[in-house]
Image 1: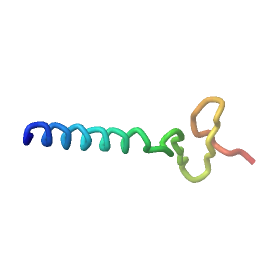
Image 2: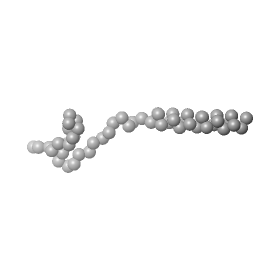
Image 3: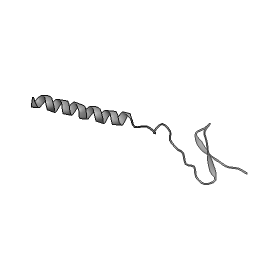
Image 4: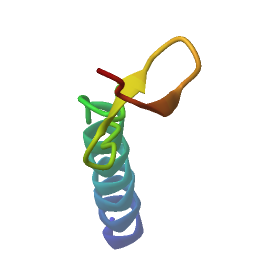
Length: 52
């Protein structure tokens, strides 16, 4: 009975830890910060110097 209890506890712990990592959201987007005097160009995925 003790081995069954330990295996069940281990399985439930592993399932709960896996589910919490799978449910982690909000990491789909990355943010880009450009230096002063430049702005992000989404077309080229680079920072471009602002003129004018």
